[in-house]
Amino acid sequence: MMNSTLFRVVGIWILFVVVAKLNAVIREQILTQMIGQGLALPFSGVLLSILIFLITLGVVPFLNIYYSLGFWRVGIVWVLLTLIFEFVLGHCIIGNSWDSVLAIFNITEGNFFILVLLITAFSPYIAAKIRALIWRTT
Image (tube, rainbow, N blue to C red; front, side, top):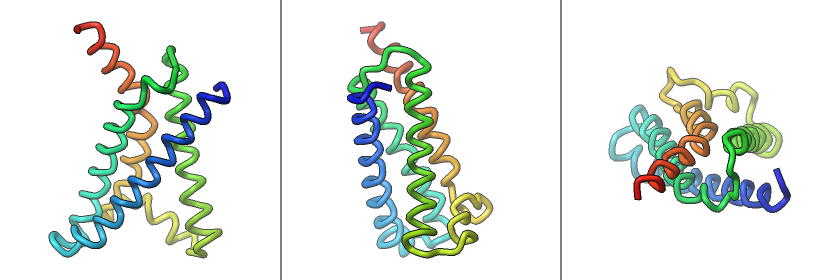
């Protein structure tokens, strides 16, 4: 990845972090009280996945990437940044136990973080394909 592209990729990922934080605030302040923690957590994961995909769909032209492998690389970089962020923030900065940090992967408890990671990984490629289809049909 060239420096300008990497700068864009990281900038978009920072936008994902902001959206994820807003999603968490909405989940804790509104959804949990409306539908309970048992439903709020998975709903929030699905909502965040949708938001990440929609953002990616909107920004993929600005990545200046024109080949499939490049879109896969972007998805992988976003996932790696997310995992590093979660582990460093959760364990090293906040001081949560590793069990607590790894709880984000527990789908049986309603945490859909794995879905968020999958969408994050696949969305650049899928969004580019969708935009290419739309471009060809207009």
